[in-house]
Amino acid sequence: MTAESTVASPAGQHGVPEGAVSVLGPRGNPAGRRNPGARGPRRPRRASGALLWAVDGGAALSAALALPAQHRSTLVLVLLALGVIALNRRASLYDTSVVPDVLDELPAVCVRVAVGWAFAVTLSPLRSLPMAVLAAAVAVHCAVAGAGRAVVHGHRRRALRRRPSPALVVGPVATARRVAAALLRQPDCGVRPVGLLADDPEVLGDAGDEPGLPVLTTALQARRAVIQNGVGTVLVVGAATRVEQADVLRGLAAHGCAVWELDADVPAYGLGGARGRGAQLAGFSRRLLVAWDGRRGGAGKRALDVVLSGALLVLAGPVLAVCALLLRVTDGPGVVFRQERIGKDGRPFTMLKLRTHRPANAHEAATRWSVANEQDMSRFCHFLRRTSLDELLQLWNVFRGDMSLVGPRPERPYFVARFSQAYPGYPDRHRMRTGITGLAQIHGLRGDTSIEDRCRYDNTYIDTWSLWQDVCILLRTVAQVVRPTGS
Image 1 (cartoon, rainbow, N blue to C red):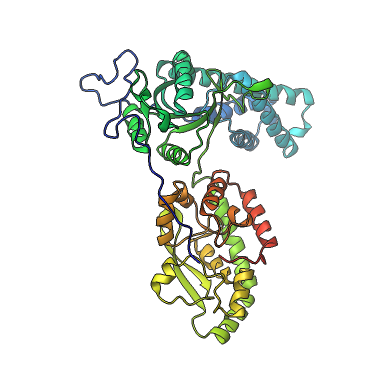
Image 2: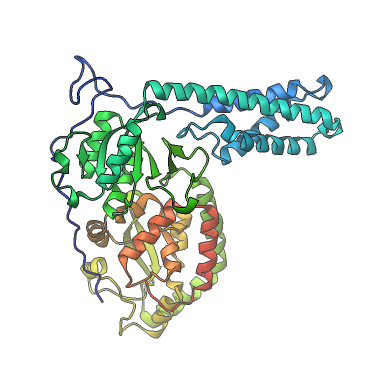
């Protein structure tokens, strides 16, 4: 059985020539003209959430000062401030990619202040205070937090008006032009389009020669425009669904750009509307597209891997010993199969399995796609593959840190090179540790199945990762462990 045939997707060659990227000069200067001695545009420094943290800490201190002197406790104050900050952080109230109106976020801030005080009162001597005193302290806390946030947001809003963030607009050319023109008519929105990244280069024709914003069509042109213009914002509009564009967007996000999805169409029957806190830009609804950050949740995922793989190695030890003994008796020596696979960030590692097939040579081991239905395989080896017991040794790879319990399945270097050429999103699977099971596997994508489908499920898993999703995938894997498919 052979692997699926793969054909590399041709890249579009319309629009701006590959060699140079036309850029929009600073406001008031003609395009392409620069001041003598200028070093080129610098990306606006992304605001830090530290000021908002300081505001919330100061609000907690102000509320504590409203309490009677004998009930002011440093420990209670610290726990209260940390609790409120943790709640606000979980609610993305320190997200500096948006500048909300303080009235929009005030209800969320007040609710979390009230929750923090409820815990503080329950766990400390403050519960002996009259309700009126506690209510006054909570009111002071909310008022100071709201006022402080209004000052910080106002300062950031004024800074963006003075120096708007350069942006690329990604999508169908006609829609991208319309959105860019609307943003340029609203200079106070804090975003200034400097170029368009075409999602449909095949329909450009002579449009790329029209005056106005430059139209880019390739990843190289996009990266050059980002560097030359100091772009910090990418706006995705219309039906920007090409796989190649998704790959470009991930690259721009990795470069440090904030990637937003803009709803450029008028919602029908009032069913659209804003999709989140502060989710509008010049009247367009917007949503932040968050790419996987390897640091996000990494400690929790690794802790789950170490605890579960260690426990399972102990519990599965007798099963592994029996399987190895029977394999030694029925198929001879060499019960452990070692094979090079590609892991996180493209780094190779040695994956372990119980040997169920003996390749004719190293070339076959590296390039043969599947042996699930091999006729000369013994009944016991077929049983190991059908029940996935041959995969149990990979628990050691998980415990060592080569793999994770849940993640994209690792593949051999030969197939990684082929699939990376045929499917633009395939290399993005390596943003995370590879796994024993994953979202693709619990949807039946094992063995000789569509690589395109696996790639889509794997990248969706990474982009939407959560620890609870890992737990759900593990539970569903247990339910499917005897499914008669090979890998």
